[in-house]
Each structure stands twice: as structure tokens, then as C-alpha cells.
Amino acid sequence: MARFEKGFSKTTGLAPGTVVHIGKKRAEKVRITVFDYDEKQFHAREVKTVEECFPYKETSTVTWINVDGIHDTHIIEEIGKRFEIHPLVLEGITNTSQRPKVEEFDKYIFIVLKMIYYNEKKEEIIVEQVSLVLGDNFVISFQEQEGDVFDPVRARIRQGKGHVRKAGADYLAYALIDSVVDHYFAIIEVFGDDIEKIEEELATNPHPDVLRTIYKIKRDTILLRRSVWPLREVLSGLQRAESPLIRENTFVYFRDIYDHTIQVMDTIEASRDMVTGMLDIYLSSMSNKMNEVMKFLTIFASIFIPLTFIAGVYGMNFKFMPELNWHWAYFAVLGLMALVAGTLLVYFRKKKWL
Image 1 (cartoon, rainbow, N blue to C red):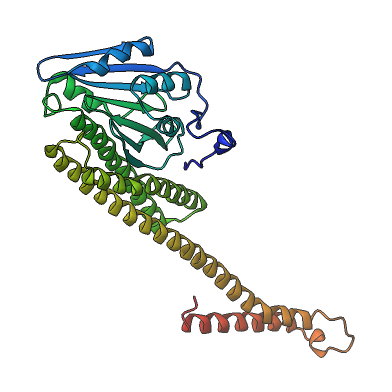
Image 2: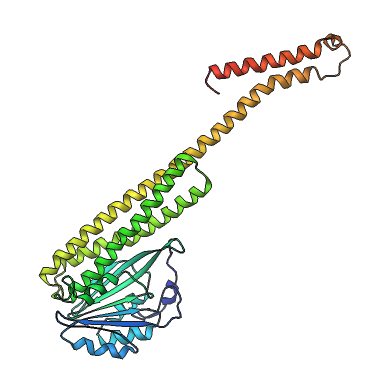
């Protein structure tokens, strides 16, 4: 389900750059992993203390420091001091309500994006903020919790496949962003399957459960659009960046991600239009069904109104009613009622109301 931003009141009255965690409360221990590599060698480890990450700033190899958990602001501040990250950037890292953006500094580039994946057990979309700090020879990624979409990147680093081990930190940042964007397509496939199922149900048997599903998909589509739409500006900014941290031969890769993002956005817009159309179809179907019910009841009432009139006339207890003393009066009245009902049925069928 879509998540509405809360917790802004925590920063009310605080000085700019005050590191305060805004997001879902978590109690698990922060996990920090380090990937250090070059074309010839590779090393991966999980560090127990944040201080163990500090020596990697001065190495000639490429280092990827991944921080799972931003609720411990002390760790974020320690990393910021060592890697000379501006306090406003640290504040943005711990605020999970940030809009996807890119900011250039002298010694690093700060990137915020939304990582989206589907929880099959809960059947819901999970949106998690990922912050990247791209330096000359390092990339620091900050995530809200353990679990991400970066396993293909880790596999390529371990196995030495692709271009990642031969390139610099800028290519690593590209690979991480590319993994996030590629996973958007998996979410879109889930939307596509759900939309096809709903279309079948709308065509056969629209019911209130379908309406709830339509609203859920519409809500998730809005959430996905809010997460993806600003990413276009981020990638456009990276393409125009004049920072020496991004090498000339890496810009072509960022253009490729930009194209993928546009494709995702077009698909999301198409899905949103389809969901809106399905909502209109559902409302029209329910209205038609109600009209059919009212039509049946109207015809039913139209037949019995004259019969009720006849029964009411001969149900009056007046003393002088000649028909009441006739031997065949009962059968004559029943025949008259049957004739009226039959005539009305023939007339309604001729008018194609039945």
C-alpha cells in the first residue's frame, strides 16, 4: 500500500543539518558490508564497527560500503565525519521521505532514489529509500533495512564478469542505479498480471472485491509513479554533470538508464489509464446490473398493478355487486386477470423489454 510521509515534526525547531531519523522505527542492529576490488583482486567482508570502514577511503582500489539501517544516527554521523560528508546530506540520508534527487559537491555526488520490490507473502509493494554517496574511489550506499536488489551486482563483482571490475566507482554507482531501475520492470509485470485478471472478472462477474482490487492497484500505481517520475530528473542531472568523479565513458551508461526510466514511466502511465478505465467499466457494469434489476421489478410491478386493481375492486364489501351472485364469477375474474397479464407480457416482449 502507499505510504504517506510522517515524522516531519521531529525536525521542527532543530538547526539545519541535524541528523534525525525519519521513517519506520527499527530496533535491529545496523549491518555494514564492504566490497573492495580492482581488476585483479576482490575482497568482501562484514565489519563489526564503523571504524573498520575508514581505511578504505585512502586505498587505490574501488570500495563499496553498504549500510543496512539508517536508524542509528551515530553511525551515520561517524561515516559522515570520516568521509567529509556535509551535515545536510547526512540529514537527507536519515530522512526516508526524500524525493529522488542528485546533488553535486566538490569531493562527492549525493544521489537519492527509491528501491521498489514486491513482497509475495503480504502481496504488497515495498518502497525503500536508497542513498548513494559517490566519491573518487568509493561508493557508500545507505538502505533502510537488510534486503535489496543488488545481488546481481555483487555476483558480477565476485565473479569478475562484465565491466564492473575494470571500471571505477562511477561505473559501480551506475550498476547500482541500473539494478534499481531494472527491478521496476518486475513490479510492472506484477501490475500487468493483476490488470489482466481484473479485466477477465469485469467481463464475466464484476463484484465488490474487484473494486477493492482496482483501488489497491490504482494506489500502488500512484506510489510507483511518485517514486519513478523524479528519477528522470536525477539521471538527466547525472548526464549533464561536470564533476570529474564521472568519467566520459560512463555517461553512455547513464543515458541507457535514462531510456529505461522513460520506458518505465510510459508503462506506468499506460497502466494508470487502464486502471482508471477499469474503474469506469466497473461502475458502468454495476449501473447496468442495477438497471436490469430495476427493469425486471418495473415489469413485474406493471403486470401486477392491474391485477391488484381488479382484486381490489372485487374485494370491496358492497352489498349490491351483481357479479358476486353469479355462479361463474370467480372463474371469470381469474380469466380476466390471466388475460390482462398475458396481454401485458405479449406487449412487453413485442417491445423487446423482456
